[in-house]
Image (cartoon, rainbow, N blue to C red; front, side, top):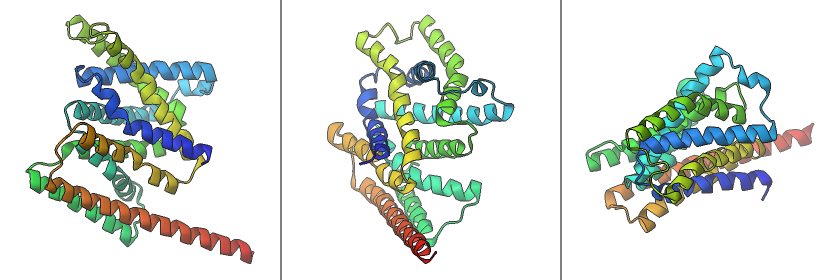
Length: 299
């Protein structure tokens, strides 16, 4: 495999293993976990920037438009991070996997609504099947699978913001975490003064894992950004299902979360939707490659 492929696999496997990591510190309140992810991610990125010198001086003087874009993206990724760690540590890993299974379809739908992209009939079919799966789960359980929807919409919207973002991945992620650094640090300080802080009060292993939240969060994101520049998006689309698949397997086989027949029906509709979406995309890419090859021969 190429370097880009290995980077993509590394990013998605790391994200798939996240439940194993956060479960080790499930006694830490989710809001504190979010605070530590932000604080230590920013520290990690600053160290990387200093060592690699890859961030230009202009990145430290962003315009009002740049600040607005990255403030919104920072809020979106914070919502995603908080929902994920809360759901994992509350025993809802199955629903987190559903969220990341439907995220690609949310990306497509956002492209239509926000950017004005046009979908082909098989893509509309895939979205309709996924919507039917979510609707079935809602009716079967009497409530909307909000964890999955929040994860999918927040990460899908974050991806959309990154698409229009004026900075590169390193500069953007550093600015995002930098914008949230002081509020997160202030909250952690408040929690510590109130006697509720976990850092330095819950054992050495907990402290190491909280500090490790920085590199654990940032390294997969940087691998993903590098891979996206090296390999086709169609290949990225296939590899990305490693993450929810691992999360789903952990939830059922390791954590023994319930997976009843109604969930199987709903998930099956989503899986069929993904199969339709993936097969159609692969066929379309093959046709485009063949057409390009024929045009090259004719010229």
